[in-house]
Length: 358
Image (cartoon, rainbow, N blue to C red; front, side, top):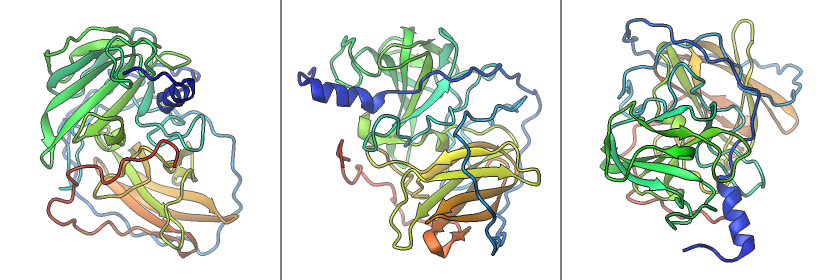
C-alpha cells in the first residue's frame, strides 16, 4: 500500500537514500594468479602504546583506491566456523567493486535517526550488475520498499531480490540490488553467481548512478539486513577488520570516527565510523558496530578520539580472515576474540523491530 502522508513518505525516502556522486576512480585491473590457501593464524596481541600522540581529525574523504587488487577468494570462503563469506561482488573486478568509504552499512546521511541498510558501490551508468550467488529471483520491479509493485516513487527505484539456494544456520539468505536503470532478470528465474541481472542506474532516491547492495537474513524485510562486508569474499591475501566499540558502561558508541593506518608508513589512511542507531543489525557472533573490509594483510594502527583524548592500538590483519577488537572507553582496547557461541546462536527472528525514530 502506498503511503499517503507526505511526512511519512519523505521519511521513508530518506531511509534508503544513498550516496551522492564522488570523484570516480579509474577501474583497476585484476591481477591473475592461483588461489593460495593461507595458513590459519591468530590475531596478534600487540600492546597499545601507553602515551597517546597528538591527534588531528582531517576532513573525511573518499576511500583510497589502490592501483590494483587481487582476485577474490573463491566462494564460499570461511576459515573460521563463525564466518560466512558466501558471496562474490555484484560489480565485476574490472570496475570499482568495493563500498564507498562514506556510504557503508550503518552510516547516517540525512538525520541522526536514519541509517543506511546496505553498502553503495560507485559505478558508471549501465554497468552490468551481477548475481552474487546462486538462487531464484523473487522480485524484479519497482516498489520494493513500499511493497507496491510498479510504484515508481519507491526509494529503491528499480530493484531485484534474489533468494539464495543456500542459507546460514537454517536461515534463508536474500540479496538486494537497487537503483537499476534496467532490470534484466525476471521473477522465477534461476541465476548463477556472475549472471547479469540488471544495469546500474539512478532510479529511486539518489543523486547519481551507483548500486545499493543489501544482505538480508531470515526474512526479506527492511529490518533484517546485515553488513554486506561480512558476507562478501575479500581479495586474496587481504582481510577484514571488525570492532565493537563501547563506553565504560558497555553502551555502544555510535558514529565514532576511527582511523586505520597501515604500518610502518601509515598511508593510505582509511576512515570508518561505528554504526548509527536504527534499522541495523550486528552479526550474532561478533556483535560488531564497525566493519572495514579489503585490507591488505599486515599490521595496522587504530586511532580514535574519546572524551577529547587520543587513543590508539595496533592489530594484525591476516589473509582471508577477520581480525577483531573491542574498545571500552577509558578501559581501552582488547584484541580478544568473542567466546564460542552457544548452539543456535542466530535468533529465529530479529529480537526487536527497530523504530524509525528511536
